[in-house]
Image (tube, rainbow, N blue to C red; front, top):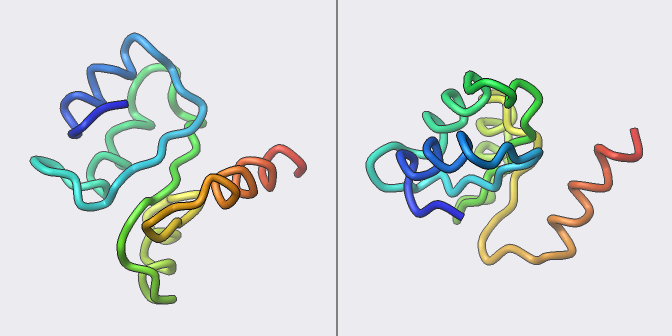
Amino acid sequence: MARDAPAALTTVKRFRPDVALLDLGLPIVDGFELAERLPAEPGLHSLRLIAVTGYAQESDRRETAAQGFDGHLAKPIDVHDVDALLRSRSET
């Protein structure tokens, strides 16, 4: 877990995750910019990105999809919703 984008970028150098849940309202650098930076890191080109946000309108979901996110979860998130997103990719 990282509390901001710089910490996330440092963490992925040690731990190469398959999935990242990104809060869009991160301090310093927002989740959209972090979503652009992470796949550029060595070994992360196929990283799955899931947006975590307080915004849940259809327009918000379209925006995260257009920005390359693989999923969109509105806060408070439910572990069952995370599980469903992860399974939807692994079953295809």
